[in-house]
Amino acid sequence: MNVRHLKLSLFLTVATVVSCATQQTDISSTSGAGSNGAVKNAPVKTVTAPVPVPVVLPEVKREFRGAWIATVANINWPTRNNLSSEQQKAEAIRLLDLLQDLNFNAVIFQARPSADALYNSSYEPWSYFLTGQTGKGPGYDPLEFWITESHKRGMELHVWLNPYRAFHTTGGAVTAESMVKRMPSEIVKLRNGTYWFDPANPKTQDHVSNVVKDIVKRYDIDGLHFDDYFYPYREYNGGKDFPDDKSWNTYLASGGTLSRADWRRGNVNKFIKRIYDEIKVEKNHVKFGISPFGIWKPGFPADITGSSQYDELFADAKLWLNEGWVDYFSPQLYWKEEGPQRFSSLLKWWDSENLRKRHLWPGLNTVGIKGVSDKSAEIVGQIKTSRNILKESDGEIHYSVAGLLQNPEMVNALKNGPYHDKALVPRTPWLKTTILDKPLLKYSNGGSTALVEWSAKDMQKVKRWVLYTRYGDQWETEILDLADRSRSLALNKAGKKLQAVTVRAVDRLGNESAYEVKSID
Image 1 (cartoon, rainbow, N blue to C red):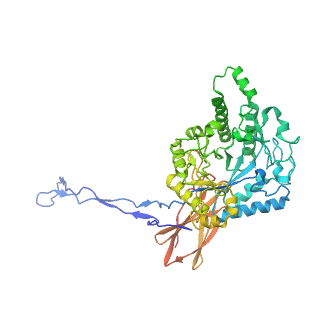
Image 2 (cartoon, helix red, strand yellow):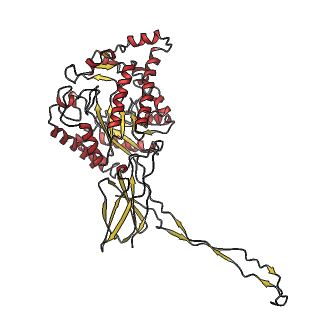
Image 3 (spheres, rainbow, N blue to C red):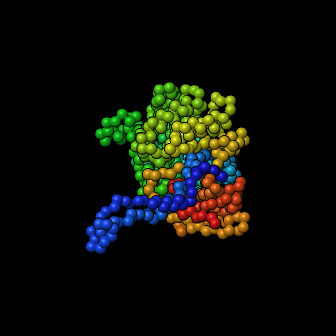
């Protein structure tokens, strides 16, 4: 429970007595009054009505605390492709319970690792990573399960998609069910055995667009997420150029004048803008996020060396952030503070490019940060650095949940340190919504305790609650899950009397409702 030392009264009634003009004015009179027959006015006083001063509640801690759940190659979940549905669910619950216990509030779940589906899709086959057979379902809808169980625990669920990867080398054999066979003209094979959609092909763009819109329309998700894979890393094709001669020649034949690199970047840019717009048309509240490679170009900022996503992946991620084509931006800053890819330098640079003031929540390499003797101390330090730099919208995403599951020291460092208390997700003010009505609040006095109960008219829009209690002149806040609808409160605590209580509902964008403070008799 957070304590906010905010010294203010429940309602201050200001009774201001104002003296009006006290100058005495002579009024002529025919009756004698005094030596000269003049009557003098008595002083007039005007008293204003009592003015109620609204209670200003303390601010609640806000920070986006997310974890990636990787399903490709069975990295995080399910741990094997031959588990029963009940075993899969048990593993999911274990991960979600861990995140809840650590006061995380968001899950980034990989539902489409390689043109396959960990959900019931009419566009792409069931994933090999679920059952060991492409196209064979597990007997339930994993995405629906993850959404339901995440929301039960007060956590957002963001669907993580790989837009262009069509087949992963750990995904079994390429069968007739695979998108490689179903869309052969739009997919190319790379030298490492991976298959890739051609980002320039209009049919590729339409197909991925349909997949995205289908998920957004049918599932109660809070966000949709792309990672760093656009055009593939050169190593995927043995250092050779991406094999898109057919699309390139078609572009030139149509009169295109861009360089090949600019043409490729343009293909991705138009697609990112399209996806952002289409999500907002379908459901405005669904946040769109991207977690690109952490370096835009070497030398940006000046002390940074490393690979260039601009030149290798043809991803102009700086442009997407500049233009506000995302709701949150999570560059993968997977390096230590001291080194040629300094964490703080990169984060400050990306922050300087955040012209539209979107959420900037860096990705942290919680599972495998290199070159440090104490991973836990390094990650905690990066969270603190992030908070200092990003004062208006704290947040980070951890790659991956394995960094918590396999490292008790990391768990303890987070739980006893920066994640000791719960936090709401930051507000997203550019996504317009209607503020929720004040909850219906009642209490009953039980002698030494007060039972407080609440509900809301628009319960389907409520995702969490915040309980505010005032003992003496100190406010305390507690973030509660949706299922929490009552609290038994001590009337006296540490020698201080319970003076007031209120509850605010929280919607899916982190906005708190109107409220009414009740005085405790």
